[in-house]
Image (cartoon, rainbow, N blue to C red; front, side):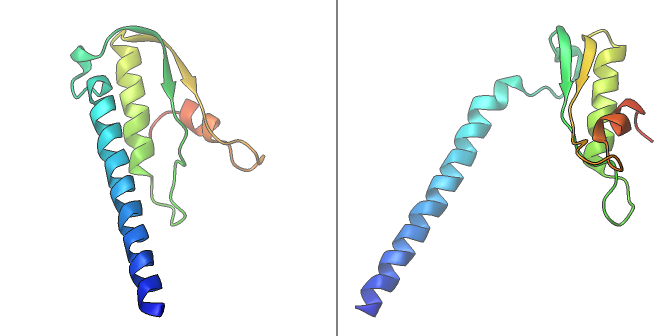
Length: 107
């Protein structure tokens, strides 16, 4: 009985892993046409959305996701690929406001 339950659990975990990996591959395949490596390939849009992220890690080191995200948004704006940047982010606390950090630009 215990052996059968163990194998059943193992099969379920295997199926879960295959599902997660399959969804990851499917999402990558479906979104590939919308990922641009070169600025000149980026189509013009009226508004560009900049997703929020913390400017610094807890250790005080600047978050590279933040740096590259802001620099990419500035490059798109300065090249005329977008007219406006819509900044998103967490500002639930007065002491923490991602959108203010984003508006100040990269360090």
